[in-house]
Length: 116
Image 1 (cartoon, rainbow, N blue to C red):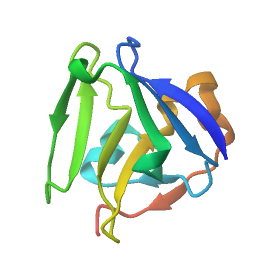
Image 2: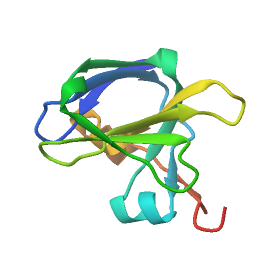
Image 3: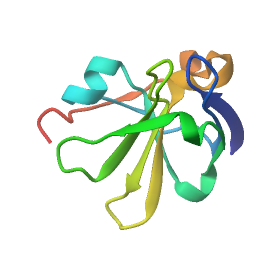
Image 4: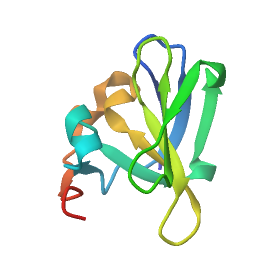
């Protein structure tokens, strides 16, 4: 596994995540599809918010089980968090928000969230 850093467009929100960037998904649900997310789900222990907690506002939709924080300044949602299907805490990192454009080297699996 590798440690990556990322955050929002204005750099007010910064984090690091430890992951291997396998099993990245591109979901077509109404939320992810509109925003073009490429998501990697990781245990919350593998995610660390470095700065900007005070810059975040949160959006919830559908079943209200995932928190979708976004930067109040630039509007970018670079990660989300909630409870996984097994009950464990997880984070979903938008790998398009990781430094150095690592997303360009990753093939995302398509996930049909629209019909899930």
